[in-house]
Structures are given as C-alpha cells and as structure tokens.
Image (tube, rainbow, N blue to C red; front, side):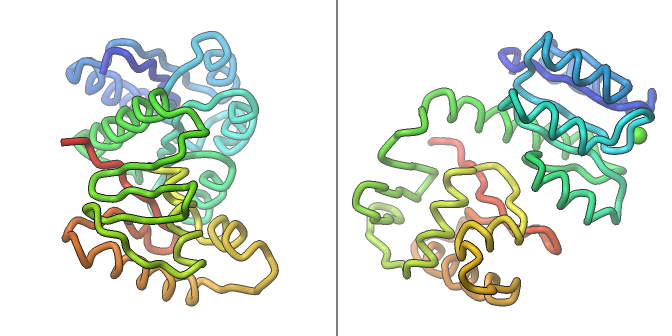
Length: 234
Ligand code: CA
C-alpha cells in the first residue's frame, strides 16, 4: 500500500505514534502527520493525500471544520477518529464529507482493515471514471443504462425505491452514508420518510440481494446509517 499517501491528524502524541508505527509496519511509508487542524489543512494542500486519518477533537479548530475545508478541493478518503458515544459528531462528520470512522479506543488491526478497504476503494475509483455504465462489486452487478440488477448473473427484481437505495450505496461504495443523507437522496424531501421506513426498505433490499448469496454487501451502522462494502475481486 505504498502507493497511498496518508495524512495522520492527531494531537495526542501517543496515539499518533501508535498510528504511524502501525502504518510503517504494514508497508505504508508514505505518510505525514499533523497535530492541529490548521497544520492538517496546510499539509493537505501541499501533499494532496489519498487518505486522511482525522481525530475530531483538535486543539485549534474542530475536525468537522477541517473536513469541510479539505472537501472543497480534495477527494481523499477521510476516516475520522472520534471518542466513543459521540454519534452526533460522527453523523455530522459523515454528512460533511467523511467516509468512515473509527471509535476510540480502536485496535490497530481495526484501523488497518479500514485502511485496506480505503485502498481498495481508491484503486476502484482510479480504474472507474464516473460515467461507467456498469457497477460490479463481488456477486453484484448493476447495469445503469437498463436499470437492471444481477446477483451471480441472475436478474433480481427491485422496486423503484430499492433500486434507488442500491445505486446510492453503490455510487458511494465504501462510504458510510447517514440516515438523513439517504432519506434526502432517495425521497428528495417529497415524502417525510423516517428512519423506520428506511429500515423496512433496506431490509427488503438486503433480503433480495442475499437470496443468491450469503455474503452481505450492506453493512448497518447502528444509529448512524449504512455502507456498501467493497469486495475484493477474486
Ligand atoms: Ca484529540
């Protein structure tokens, strides 16, 4: 994973050292670290990272502010690191453009798993420019031109809402999408859809996807939202 430039933003020196040591051990040698939000923004524009590990609680400016600023020009994958129980912060960070999160205290294995997932997504995005007519992820194939969905090459029939949900998750594969974000995009404010209805639609979508496969492509983030995981091509 030496082809991925990583920016580590963390003001707690021991956590920062743990992260950078783990990166080195795992062959991610192309990284820089910042301990304040302003330093992070400056480094971000000079190094143009592919991945940012961002602590939300910084001494100068809020991590959310860093995300908003950086997102205006960078498409880097942003994984936030936040203290346990701060779900509202996570949701705000995700809605501001972060992709995924780690909750403190986290294990380094967990962190590396997220980084590997981000790396797969980066390679996927590099190979697939926006206007690709087809989406393939493991056993799932979506033909955008004909609005058809295949699981293990068998067509599955989705309702209009299920199709919208699936394509929304697919177009942001790897990213955690919050309930509010999904409801806004799928129902567009025309209907006051609530989280309970979203859960019902999501369950029926998953059931259809899982008919032909045991592997679940859609991950639930309790109290936060949903994420389509990227499956490594065989
Ligand atoms: Ca901190």
